[in-house]
Image (cartoon, rainbow, N blue to C red; front, side, top):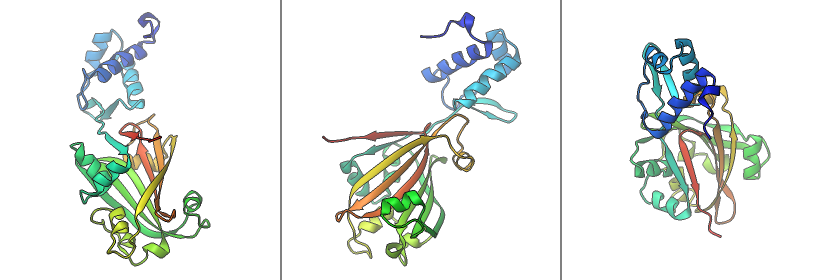
Length: 257
């Protein structure tokens, strides 16, 4: 139920009406909001009150401000990550990494950027999934995923060092078809088939370095998604530790029972 306008603080009335217009689509993504002067006249409030209302919308992730240009409705490219075995195999059959194939199927322009590829001691949570002692050597590929040039996801891909050393997994360059295709290549050095994924999701507020890397607005949480990939022997061959802003991803899981 909508609050009684007569009982609202003036800046909340400004924010509530503009938010409703954004959610209805009357103000489209990328659209510039009217000037502070125009909004002050429309709502019969001071410009300071308008600024406070826009600040509330900015903290909610609905608008962004550009120095000297005004406030704009935040553009939010979304990727719907649909999790089923058949979809995974269908995306893999394109010869492209799964994220890229999924985004392209939705008419978007994906890109993966390598931030770092190093050998590192296993963090506790990652070591637990591999079943190795904390601090055991792992190779990690740290990636940034973008869609339509907007940052979408930070992904740290871990592999046991004994398996990854001397292979493309340990090289600081993109792998054609993605790491999973390389792992499953029956003519390659690993040749292990992925048969199962288990994902754990944790919702929290972002840390400062995540805010900077992913351009996360105030008030928007992130989902930390830790996914373990299992081979036919039941062993973990990859752990993917991802940070995804909750304002630009939709996850769909299909569970057969």
